[in-house]
Length: 226
Image (cartoon, rainbow, N blue to C red; front, side, top):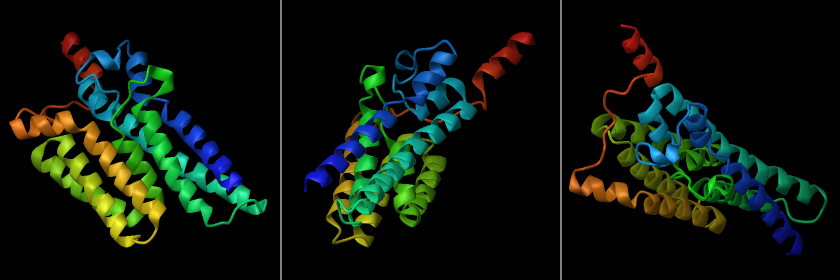
């Protein structure tokens, strides 16, 4: 039991620190902007996309997803190490991988390196879930993308996509307590983080993804030259 606790603490600390590295903050800072003071004020890929264009939004999205994937891998490697040393059973790996997802989300939501002002964890959760459960994640991603195209609202696709993914994972992994708790926690955290968006959707005031340039800075520069 002691070694399980030690392994869990190691995974949580590493994944939290990884999650605390905010691509949105660094991208905005490199372009002379404080991401917390522009757009929605959220340090996530959607705000980067709206502020700087699709190119930077996709870069931020990829980085955030990589944090989730890396944290899952961390959980797997720590579990593998401890099991090879004969300290724990190899079955602990899946539990530690689930902890990796949650740790990375905690870091992204409350990043210690950026004043605990983070993002809404969708990309981080997607990256982690994609490694753990690729088929449910791909199905959910396709549904989310379709909803975003139809509604032009990132929040609609994000929330419904995450809920669908969590439901598919719970159904397919029913009986595995660690996985079911992780999936339910992911869905709950992201829904809570999106409460303001859900409220605006119901009121008909949610911002839409319209007239977004590939790179807004480049577009403005071209317009000035003309």
